[in-house]
Length: 76
Length: 309
Image (tube, rainbow over all chains, first blue to last red; front, side, top):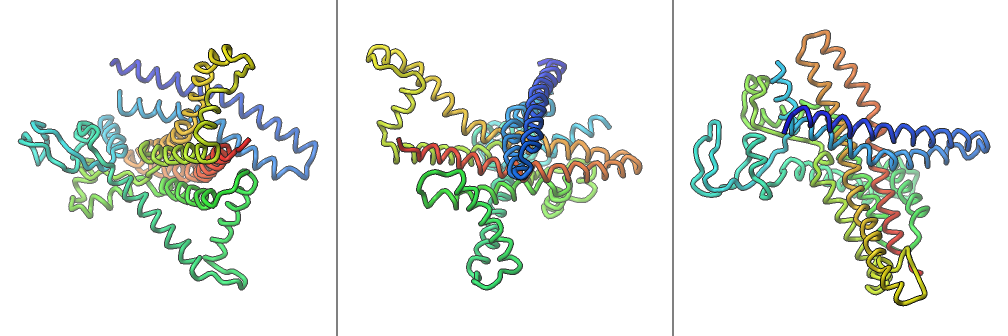
């Protein structure tokens, strides 16, 4: 398999994953700020839940990054 | 030098593999020659490790995860034995902190009755956290120690010709993360069948989300429902395992890549040290978060399995 194709594949996997995550985290963070501005006393609880959802949001892009790096360093 | 870098990276990405090489396999290196019969041995190179195929054990992952579990049992068990109702101090205070945290989390998210879930959540959280924590130890320390103990000379090791591979972070091994998630998956199905009965479990897979009063239409919906529901069901353990693997593998990868800078002179070496420290500080968040998410999702999945309408 052409080594260049593997690098290209890894770049696409990581790039598209990052795109989705960036938009998702932006929306998530924005809602957190809005929610905290409305009810400051819920701030810590909302932040905790935000981290939980951030971890879930991160999952598929991280799988992409993991597989991309794996391909880059062992198949090319 | 470039070839050296790839070799260094590949060296750090290879597990210590004990497995069966087939008869007729030609080994390179000092133990060279053709094998007259299938032999069980430690792999001397990445190629050999790959050629072992299915019959290979990642001794380093298994060993380190077992050792970390023993350490945890020692600390938590010791604190439990010496527990007193007086004002807690030291280790007991720390253990109580964690147990209380897990207790509150389970109470919030688990809506059934089970003696298993809270200890399971504690085990998963602490074990995954300890396995992830191994990532913060500088990349070269433990593999070099292992090679020295194995009898290799310092010259061989610094030339990058060491045959002793050791990956100390078990959660960067797909097998370990899948082992954890498949166990959770088995528990999910076990409790689903136990609480809802086998008929209820199958009904859940085939009667949601499309439902109809008409028997004929229902019969047509069953394969559609089954397909959708089984994809959702299988996505759970797969995403659980790969989420943890992807995060940890990427983190370890960046540690290894920064470690490459240590071989390129004093200026880049110092910069490398600073970068390692910075990435490690960021990684502390990722480690804890991933352990917490694994535990949280386990609790949520088991809670869904305990639902009884």
